[in-house]
Length: 396
Image (cartoon, rainbow, N blue to C red; front, side):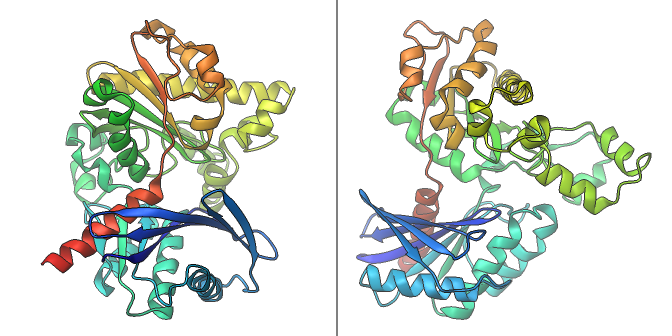
């Protein structure tokens, strides 16, 4: 695959992140990245190439199959990067169920299996399904590879993965899967570069973005995570509720008579920071607001994160380090400080100046628990896995 170009897709609920990578004989190197916000009219392809930024207007109309959007995007990329045809496409797929424990080349059978998992991840999985189908329709001979967020957590024991429900439900797929696995895989691979001793030990990584979760790592492997069966579980997020007493759901649908669709919309789109504050789902807006509801929403957010850190430490028998990553984790010192204040009893001591500067290490030298800020790179993991799958096929 030497000298070839790989494209990665990392779809969100309303955006498509792109990664462009050059592949040589041994590895892949990022050469550009981009994002398309499907809510924006007219559509714009935002491209970052080194220190250069460009906004490319798109004429395409957003359709259910996304064919127009993807076709115009591929045409622009081929022209700009002077390649007539890409070598391969890698996709982030949120849910792999129990079927996929590692990245795989997408065949018709794999595509069908991915689509069959839509009910387990209704907010995210459909976007991967239509991107895979769009590439298959537009470039049918282009190899595609799926990288699964759930796969990284397959190292967890059944002790962690089981709910206290009838045993046959576990066999039917009702279990804790965990998500944000591509981000945690990157953190596990990058942490030794800035904290080699901590990386060998007991680490809790906090992926804090519009979607948010935490993962307990022991020796770089996933031992436990805050998200379980769905991407609703764990800590509160931008618009998602986080962990919820199931009795609340029974009450909402039984006593209050709310239909399933309305409850689902509430839990995915009207809860979390938005629901708590009544103002905004964006933590930046809440940090800038003087409203007491904004402060309370952020206080609850920080408290729940800290409580989850302590709980996950139980799963790995202690705590050597905490790593903050993703948009909020990487760029919001006040949120990190609030979380760490709750963890002072564990020996967490924050260096205020380092924290304000988003430094790689933000704990004091005498802190019993190291605290780090490490930017994640899910697209790099997708590219590496795509390269690995296709390179292995070539070697075979």
